Image 1 (tube, rainbow, N blue to C red):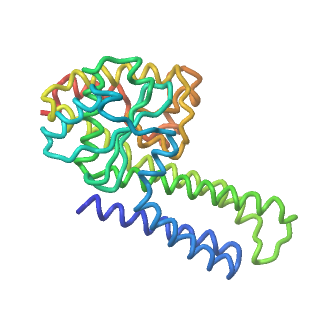
Image 2: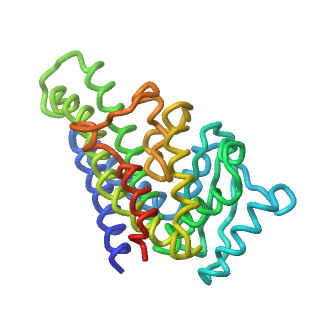
Length: 288
């Protein structure tokens, strides 16, 4: 019920944001904002999983294609007493994974091609247990809706910015250039903060649930350590609005140029808790 309430708040925020943005363009913009809000909120609920899969350029795989992938997921789902999600593979060379969907009966798990090349199946089992935990904890819809908010707000903010640039500086009421520029700058920041607030606590919970599911936190801890290293070295090409869905922040190579750090102001917009702390909790058996 708590996650359902958070999802409702997010969808209401997305709709209200669209209406406010439309209001900068006068009465006509307000009406268009309302229509846009209805389309986006409905689409965010029903099609957020398809959006995430399409953004990752992922393709479905069969048991014949990847028997180990299916065997591990079947075993995990049997343990968790859950239906098996749809399984996908993304061509992304960076080792990573994510889960998406609106509920356990309409869920999907996606791993990258880089994950299967960089790790053994025991470590991948820990990663898959983590993603299945997101599904069982019913927080994947929240992450997917947050990602949709990020994409939508960023798109509309860019539209506002271009509208302001071509307005010629006229100060009439229906074309408030200053307001549009402020919106273009602040809206993506607001979307990023929404995603960060939602995502960080979920990762600790999913790590603990995964360790309990397989009665061992070490495979996931080893996987996280390696995933952290690869994320700093291999660019991913992931859409920033979808980054919060992944088990490890996929944008570290782009943001840090392969280096460390990431504290201070940047921490405000971090969609994941520190990997070292996640590993410490798993290895110290804080999940028990």
